[in-house]
Image (tube, rainbow, N blue to C red; front, top):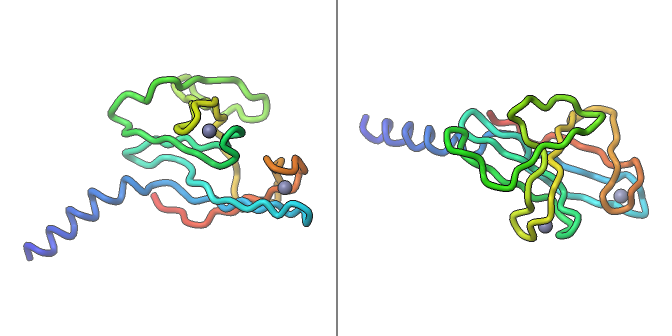
Length: 134
Ligand SMILES: [Zn+2]
Ligand SMILES: [Zn+2]
């Protein structure tokens, strides 16, 4: 009985950390074939911002506990196609490696929509959700 309780407590302490989803990006341009995975979205306890750092040339993310104050350097910018920002949402964060500003995207996964590939700049990037856990 005590072991079960320990396992339950362990699960409760681990689950909020991995809330969100893992997005798989694949470029359909045969000359490019860019492929990368990126964790996206926060959970009940955590907020997470993810984006592509153009200096490091990879997907990066930062996360913090909702009840704590967000890390410094977050900014909000208006983006004409995504008007889902609320007043307290931030969509620009400093890259954890190089401090270059990174735009945090909110995209619809598993749709027919294609995105612009950060490597070849063609409109051929497909986004698929790998795991949805929240
Ligand atoms: Zn960077
Ligand atoms: Zn590409």
